[in-house]
Image (cartoon, rainbow, N blue to C red):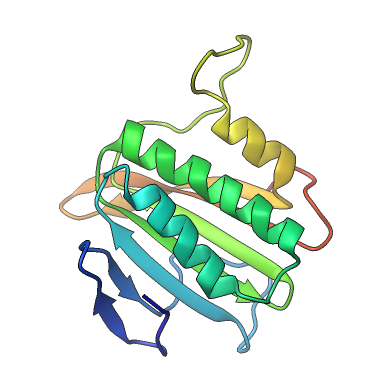
Amino acid sequence: MGVGSAGEQRTNPAGVHAKASGLGISPSVESPDARRAEWTFTPAASSVPESRNLLRAFVAEGLSPEALDVAALLLTELTTNAVLHAATPYQVSLELCGAVLRVGVSDRSEREAKIVVGRRPIQGGMGLRLLAQLASRWGIDETATEPAGRGKTVWFEVDEEGGSGSPG
């Protein structure tokens, strides 16, 4: 499934809803030349590689292979977290402006996303640590969801400069 023009919506056979539109997150660089897309996924394990494939298709030649690999790894971590911990439908939002890619993963869970400190987990707990180490900028924003409730957007930026791990 490819990304269409602004406002175009498509659904693939797996039930992934796609819409090329504005993001629900604020980019660090505003530009009319930015390309944007978002997809909504059900919380299924199969949505993780699907989101990664859509990211790679969306970016195409906009980033170096190394920066694209970092973005794909971080998106995999965040979508896995959404599937395992939020267990709600979630959105992946992308914005490419020049050589800066901003990715957001929004869910409808009130469960706090946090970096696990002080233990060496056998499985889990490393996703946000990777985000802090590899992303150029990152953050967690609380969001309102319908019906009345709270959710969150975990976002990151990757650029050609490499990660500094600085929160936004």
